[in-house]
Image (tube, rainbow, N blue to C red; front, top):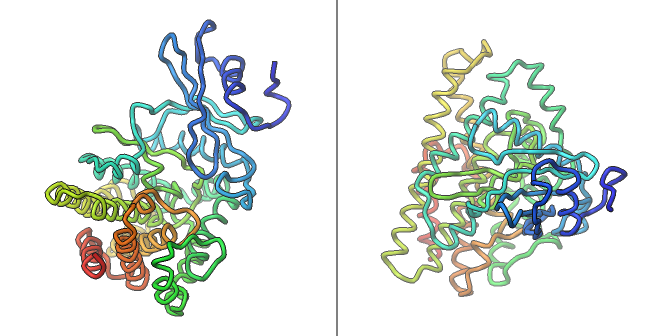
Length: 408
């Protein structure tokens, strides 16, 4: 029998079954357990354990000491504790929008949670050109609740600083600092640039000193602005969806940072989905329908966030100075500025950097992929350089359309 209490090791499928039998009080003693490792992300091992008799199932997520994407990234397995505690906290702040947590094991560095196999990963669904009309409403509720209610505007300052300490996350933050803010903006050996756009990237990104300066400013804001408790990696690969449900997963990058970081990641990944639909849907009517859905969703994510943020602020603000006339507008303007900037950073790093997205790399026609990438990068640069000018959902969509007209 494998001993799970004496020290950490990376589990295989058979060991995940044994772990479920001996360490968890979830399945019946006579359960017929099967297991499959289903992790397709960059960092962790994810086991789905099923009782073939009852149909009950769980997910065991284990943090390894190095990233699956590259063994250059040595990681603290404490990220699994952070994920477990964040999901528990988010379930209180935004009930119904995260999977239920069952157990955290600090020895094996794994957590056990609800199986969401009746949902699908949003990135995959959007690449298959599906629609989720409730998504904008769901994700904006989640973001407003988790970002505003963990800030100094609402929490006592000592309570908030204790959370900052609890969720300090230097190893995962370093990945973001490198892959999001630094490497895409110079000719880094780790970058993965599609050859037909390399000259465009070299000219428009790596040779642009103004852009480099602005990304340096943004990096240091990211390093120093402990505004809200972020998910930290809120892209469409970290969201499970079905028609009437949205579940946010994988908050292992969570830490205190600028609130616009989460919102910008959502917007950028909707733009990737838009670019995929533009390049791959051949039927003109079907393409127009999907593009309309995605632009409406982008608009709604921004505008609903603003609407709900204002309402939650008025209902929950406790900080005396935050109640002064004009401060709410100042605070929200800063979030929208950061949202635009991070939209540009995420668009840039997924096309130039080490971790590309399926939305783009699955475009088989090289000319259309080139057009999609140049559209995203053109918009990205403007989002970064002119980040103070984006105040509404229409502003974000207008830039996307203008960039699209240049290259498609």
